[in-house]
Image 1 (tube, rainbow over the protein chains, first blue to last red):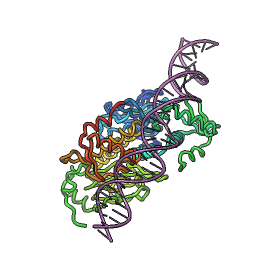
Image 2 (cartoon, each protein chain N blue to C red):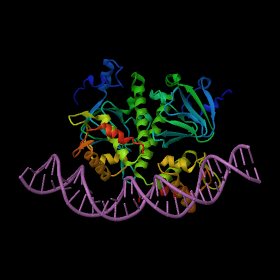
Image 3 (spheres, each protein chain N blue to C red):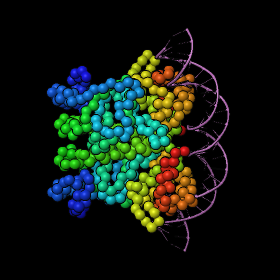
Image 4 (spheres, chains in turn green, cyan, yellow, red):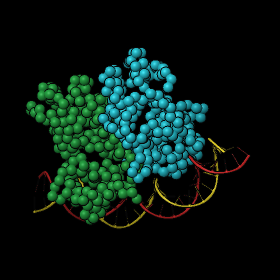
Length: 231
Length: 231
DNA sequence: CCGCGAGTTTGATCAAGAGCAATGTTCAGA
DNA sequence: TCTGAACATTGCTCTTGATCAAACTCGCGG
């Protein structure tokens, strides 16, 4: 593993208040790994022996039911902590995380967690905030799933991905990682068929453009309107 | 407000490692309040100026959509911390909490949070765990909602309430707080009509007994089977 | 440049459960 | 004891979106 550069961490919230030498210390204890698209970083139920920070790429956090259905609980973007089961004193990971695109993550052994909390100013607060915002996000999704019709849920899911990862292209806002119809249906509790029909309809209406595994939102405004229509 | 007794806290996880004098200190800074059934402890969007501990009773945590639909995100039972928005550095509560039965809660002003974390051993860990288990619960609910048919969701919701609050009666396990059909439908994203039909069917089949606002599960085992049938 | 497979599209059918409507029941308070 | 409000039940209809089925297309590896 090559020597990691300090600038990797110095701008990220969990570490931004730390001095050079502390960051060095943290990096020296980290492992860095690269994950291919589709590779699992860790799996539900496995021993939670490390915690992670995503440096580059995007992850899906997935839960699988006993019956084999799966659902995408949330996405992780660069700079976020994840797999922080140790904070919760859990000994296994409660979900699986999979690289949605080629990704790079740092990780540390669980035993360092208490030390990080105690030693590095801002780390505790930051991880609380991560937990909290994740809780908020999931509550949002839950509420949506329980109350909204499929079209609105799908619109909201697409918008969430765009907000989290969208980058401007000449055509509009593009989701920065590959997404299949199946993926979207796994986020919204519907089927890939329904998602496909919706995307076709939206494309016909000029709101999105989509190719095989990529989606560009050409008219975000109308999609937003759609996602929170009252009727 | 009458003087609070130290034994109120000494057995609860967030405080169990503390000495008498520390508990006294914590209690002296707390306010205690009683809430009637149906009363709100705090409301979504309001300024998050206090954090809470439920001493007695049961709460529902509710989110309301712009369109006015509401959903019950989770229940709180005695001994649990709640309204810990401050930990997340949020300045408003992300959900509303309402007393499902007559309840008593302690609360402290937000400004004490950092002090609690720093000063009282185990408090930080405990609140992490609270957050974490809540995250787990909600993920569970989300997965269920996205993948399971209505009957299984309703069965699971009833079982969850029984597990959390069930007490033995001569007939079976009774949910310890009032629950309407509407409440259950708000937990499961269905309608009160559907819940009513299901309860009737289950009653006919001898698995539950229910009166106006109370539910007794007479045959938990069969309900469990129902809640995770594979077909 | 071909062929194969993963991902997608679209049509047709059908069932689950929402919505609507009307009636029934329990309970708290006057 | 009566009345009204809150809660519950049940029948009927109709819509949404799941399911089944089949064909299509893109893009990659050989």
